[in-house]
Image 1 (cartoon, rainbow, N blue to C red):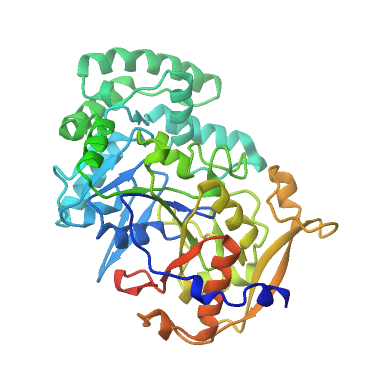
Image 2: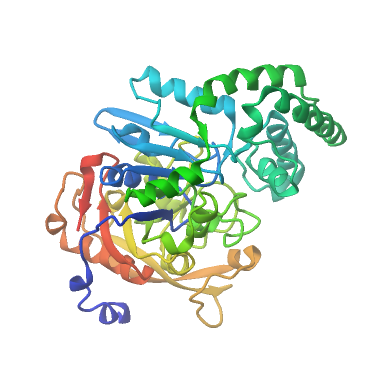
Length: 443
């Protein structure tokens, strides 16, 4: 096929990944690309890991030997000794959930002390946010978005409306109580109008003041801290949550999250200027997945059944089965443009080990007709009408999960990885063949 002629001589373009001073890692699909594992691996070479957006609607799964950790708010670097983890100003924090996460890690012997810092400007997720999230989702009926109902959207809504509460408020009890009273009164009226139950302000105050006592030692001006760290030549890794096509501006709106999940969001969500970023790494699965509602052009039920049957592709946060499809190069190429992706990490290659034939989407046709599109339509309805244009590649029919060197991968597996990297417009630097740290191949 023409694609193979176009990709001739691809091999020499590949080179080993070297972490730069300030590196952003983003998901180049619809989230769940395996970013947590890649971040964990790369954290060994950095000093600081920064989370810059999202809330506890995201989940990163880390496998260390026989231990499995699922992190929701705390950056993945917390599992590495000598690393500092920063929750930036762009994150929305449920204080009670964060305390539970901290305590859960401590019970498992993970140090959470001076190695965790929380931005005083980060906004809070409140109980009324969760109630509003659930009610609004129910009212949408068949047009529901598929939210996790963790209150993330309403919390960001209050932030934009300039009515939100922040960590700086939480750690000042008198200020917090005064502001909370106003917010409870207003949101209870809103909940009543929507047919929901009122929030008990006294209980919320007690729960959040209790959480504040635990969190206060971690709360600082993280922008100042990060800039001093850069002056000291520290290596910083910015950890993205969710994926490019869940971005509030660039995703498949309205089936998106409520924050900027792209590389630009790492700058605004941490206070680091764009010209201080040295590298952007995009993470993709060797196929495509999505949780919740919204268009997924390459969705294939048979592929999903196979992966689910292998015990794969269930959400770390919700437990929901992910929708699965063939690799979508149209989407990942666009993600590379939006994020400025320099290098690519491919995960879950081993998930395709048993397939005789593997398809790659290289273009779309609306309703299967007309010209081939090489850019995803911005309108979600139009994207849902897109039919993929596929090219076919032979599978390798060989287990790859125990392979540790790139040259030892089956030739057809290497060819596939190199092809999707080329189509995505980025240099291939990492191939993952399993959840464990040791199952990571560096080129």
